[in-house]
Image (cartoon, rainbow, N blue to C red; front, side):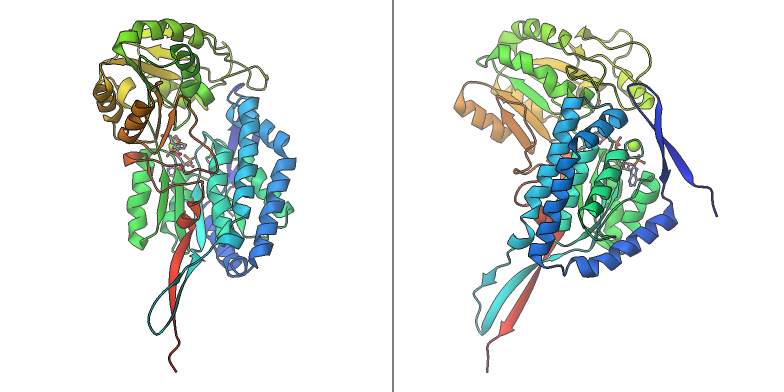
Length: 457
Ligand code: NAP
Ligand code: MG
C-alpha cells in the first residue's frame, strides 16, 4: 500500500484548514474510468423519460441543498455568500434545463432515393471534466449536465484547491437515484488525474476550463487519440465606454464587472476603454465607486468582494502592481489573515504594460482613453483573448456595429452580464474552443450517426 496523498483544504479568508481530502492517483483514476465505462453501457440505454426524471430529481436535490452548497463555497473559495447562493442556484438551473434534453435529442430524416435516411445523436462515452478553482460549482455543472443528459458518463476532476462543492454535487446525484458510476467526482492533481483523462483511451471527450497554457497542452495531447475537447480559457475583456453613454451608470457598474469574485473571473472586464472626451469625467465617477466596494468577510451578507484564492495567487496578482506602478486609486482590504488584495485601478498604462496585456485574474483594472469607434475596436481586439466584453452607448447603431466588431464570444450592451444558462457561452481566439450552455451545448456531447434503410424489394 502506498501512503494516501492528502490535501489540506484551506479557507482563503482565514487561512484555516477546513478539512483534508484524499487525492486520487493513477490507479484510482483508471479504476474510476473503468467504472464509468461499465456504467456507460447501461446509462445510455436508460429510457429518455427516465433519464430526464433522474436529472430532474438531481436538480431538486441541488435545490434543497443550496444553502449548504453556498456555505461550502464561502468557506472553500472565499466567495461572497450572495455569489455562492447564485452559483448553487445556477448549478440547479443548468441541471434542470438539460433534464429536458433526453426527450428532445432529435435526429433528422433526410430525403434520399431508394430508402429512408435518418440520423441519431449518439453519446460519446466517458467524458472527463477538468474544473478550475474560480467557479467550482457552475463550471462543473455546465459540463456534467448536458453530458449526462446526452447519455454519457462523467468524471469530474475539481481543482485541488476547491473540491468540496463538486464532491457534494456527486453525493446529491447518488441520493437522487443517478446510478453508481454515472457521475464520479475525483479530486486529484491536474498533471495526474487531469492528464490521465487525456491519455486514457476509454475517456472519449475532455472538457477543460482553466488557463490558456494548460488548455493548449491538453488540446495538443488529445490529438494522439483524435479526442474531442471543449476549452474554456482565459480572457482580457474590454469594457468600452462611449461619450454618449449613461456615464454615471457605466462608472457605478464598472468595478463590479472586474472586481466581482475578486477579479478571478475569466469574463472580468479588466480593460476599461473610455472615449477621450469624457475620460476625466469618467475617472471622477469611477473613484468613489471603487472606494465604495465592500471588501471583507465573505459570509457577511453585505460583502461585495472576498479574498483571493491562495497566497501564491496573491503574489502573482501583486506582481502586476510593482512599486511605482501607476495606481490611480484603490479600494480597501482587511488586514490580518486571509489572502486579501484591494481593488486597484491603474492609469495611465502603456499599451505594452503586462498589466494591460496579460490576464491578471485578480482585482486590478487598467483604464485607457480612445479617440473614436475605430480606435476603440483596434484596442479592444489587440489581444489573443476574446471571451467577453461590454459596450456602453445610447446609439443603437453604434452598439450593434461595435458588438459585431469586437472579436469575442459574449458581449453585453449597457450591461455586464455574460452568463445565462439558456444562451451560448465560450471564447473566440485563444479564449477557447466550443460553446457551453444554451440549446446547442448538447452538440459537444453527442456524435451524429447516419443510417440509410433501403426500401428496395
Ligand atoms: P489551470 O492551472 O489551468 O488549472 C485548471 C484545472 O486544470 C485545474 O483543475 C488543474 O488542476 C488542472 N490542470 C493543471 N495542469 C494540468 C495538466 N497538465 N493536465 C490536466 N489538467 C491540468 O488554471 P487555474 O489557475 O486553476 O485557473 C485560472 C485560469 O482559468 C485563468 O486563466 C482563467 O481565465 C481560466 N478560466 C477560464 C474560464 C472560462 O470559462 N473561459 C473559466 C474559469 C477559469 P490543479 O487543481 O491540480 O492545478
Ligand atoms: Mg494551476
